[in-house]
Image (cartoon, rainbow, N blue to C red):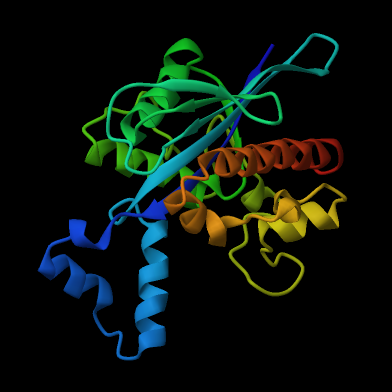
Length: 243
């Protein structure tokens, strides 16, 4: 039997005032117009050096001897705005899934504990090799947390215990045109007849707004919709394109 971990993170830029003057200058360097400055500020959420994890969504599955998959659990870890204490609050989302409200450090530590219990668990992501995996690795180091697995092991075209559907569905092409063009997650889900995580009024562009308004449960539910859709997309790929 093989265990699978489907995961997704949501990130938000760190407060501007938390950066030194030299860092602020570096972030905005070469931005001359207000539009260019806004673009650079919006890109801060994509780097572990200038942003933080505000939600981690996880789903665990397991294959059985009959070749089917069994659901183990699904959970979210959400970082409430200005939550710097080490206390953890457990709540139920409207979906019935558990959500743990805690600090970013606790979120990351909870993630790494999984690999201690399941050292050979197989990761399933969409664009995880280019974003989620390196982000968590670097963010861990910045918070003085030692990762329990090298999520970036292997090479660009061959890596163990990880299926990145963005790579698989584009046949490892970096092209943005033609048959192997990379589309975004929303486009792939709709094309394969899967309910898009964006269908309920929130997407990645709204996460910061929701976070600053303490709407962390809605972020968690959105993040878990991403996870569920990633698993459903994996099943499509596994059935028709896996050899």
